Image (tube, rainbow, N blue to C red; front, side, top):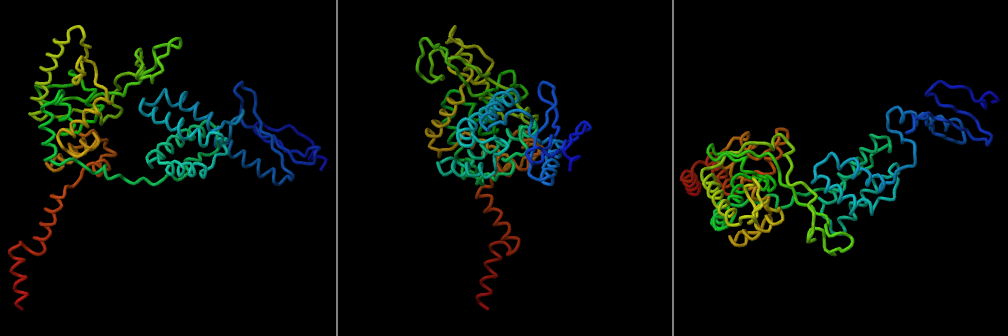
Length: 426
């Protein structure tokens, strides 16, 4: 026992175990180095040597796997999430992705689980949060966004050694049930009613690009004349229009006391467009003849507007602009769509439903899947899943299939009727 109490020189990386004067067993486990380069050792103590050895082996395994907590004061969930979203995620993700992360962190995660230490956060804490979110009226998709955000953030914490496990990777998010609005493309008759109204409006070609070719809102509003080849009847999609973001420009001395977007001196702090993030999104799309004619007419009308506006015109290369030039706001575009539906007496729907409509029409025309994928901008690895989501089989097509099945099994209607009469006579 006396020899066991002695501290002996250990090889580098080897843990020291000894019996202290307090009657408990102690260990010093080398865990690497601190930020300043000095060695970092964790101190453990247990009442028996057996318990201590088990704990030392567990900690050494975590150290060797890279999952042990790093030196320093443990991170709280709040401190880590705020650091992660601003200093780690923001510089490398798109503006839209950052916005989703930031809202999930600020509105849902920090107020609910922010006080926990990240190494003590449990899956049950998160599952309870998701249930509370839904009980208070949040949709399952909102809870999923919070789940994806903290799963990504904690994954980075584990990789950096600030946490030993990712509690969000173990938590079960709420079930996502596809909403009925996901499968509501407009019928050909509804598209024709919309076309009648579209021809009466400014920027009419904008809506037909959505209904006929399925272009996303950001793709259409980010389209420039340099991307359009009317002679060869195609356009290239390369960038997306971003939602504007503003900061106050009025100054603290005389604040306007309005939201930043309504400040008279507001300052735009977000770029107008970003390049399409995927290779499939950067694509060439063929233009039907009527759309070519609409775009030619639109170019002439835009030239007349430019001449009438004179010095008030904001010069840009955008295909679709405000009355005095400059890019269209996605919010304005959304309200224009709603007014179009109302004027055409077509049921209310999302702008994205126009994309479902275009994909379904392409299927009904018998366009090969590979061509549909290119027009819609779907990645090869996800195209089958996207087709399952976007291509909707109309009732008329289902009835036609039922008719063909009936003819194949029971014969044409005339034959089936004769067979039925013969059976009744028998």
